[in-house]
Length: 279
Image (cartoon, rainbow, N blue to C red; front, top):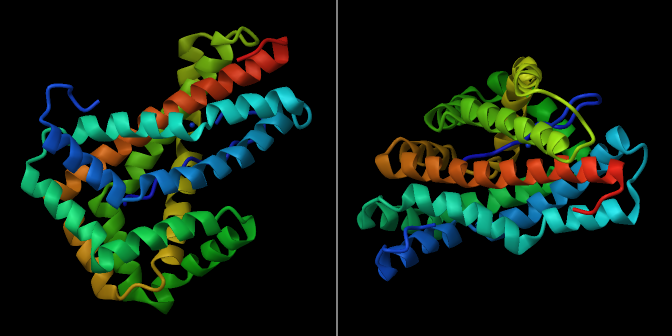
């Protein structure tokens, strides 16, 4: 599935239904694609990422770990059922008009052979990246991939380009940052006009783009290391089809819904923690 990355928060800067009239069979097919991508399992890894990020937020904004009140707020924000509901809403809406045969093609690809292995490797890679040392090592390896394995480097770049991953990640990250600022302001601890928020967010665009490019190549190089080159090409080829493009849009729609809500609530939580209120 397309790799989605939210850049790390930096000191001093904020960080990120299927139509009810649809036929039951159609809904089940959309849900089966969701299940084939093992998105609920991926979201459990994102919960852990959120826990790590919340510690960064506490150090930057709360002068410590935030205490039990902060931990309770973070647990509420990253509730597994809530995350799945948010992710599903964006995912379902984007795929609701896809023809049944296209949905079937996606489901078959991700439940058999290389597609099934790809999903597993992506989740394992994301979980491994919870360790900063693993991520640093992967970044160092990715820097030499073009020289060490030019065909693999080209194949991964082809996959990134087919899904427009850099632009989609940058857009998602900047939108999430904006929602974080809005949460800070909505919570009452900060005062900032919309124009100021937008100006601050856009000032992060270049750094966000560079970080997304580095992370994507490092993550995909690491995750796809066991794959044959032909399997990476097959995945990129699927991404270029109408079904693959629709799935890419659905995933990013789901992640946008999820991250925007989470980052707004994190901003609220920081603001409420500073003013002594509960989320």
